[in-house]
Length: 73
Image (cartoon, rainbow, N blue to C red; front, side, top):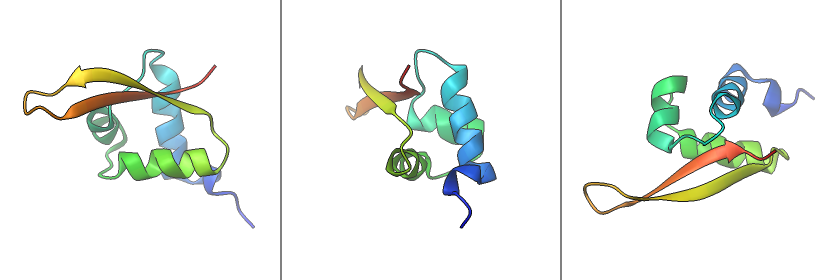
C-alpha cells in the first residue's frame, strides 16, 4: 500500500513547513500550498508520524486565536 506521505499534496505541505523555521499559520500554508485544507493536512501528517509543533502567535484582527505550525527538529 502506498504511503499517504508520498502524495503531492502532503509533500508540498512538508516542504513548506520545513522551509520556514519559525513556522507558518494555516492561512499562509493555504496560500503557499494552494490548498483550502491546511489544518486537515497537518492532522494527516501527524497521524502518519510527522512531528509537527504548534505555537500560539496571538490574536487576529477579528479576535480569533492564531497558531503557527512547523516540523519539530
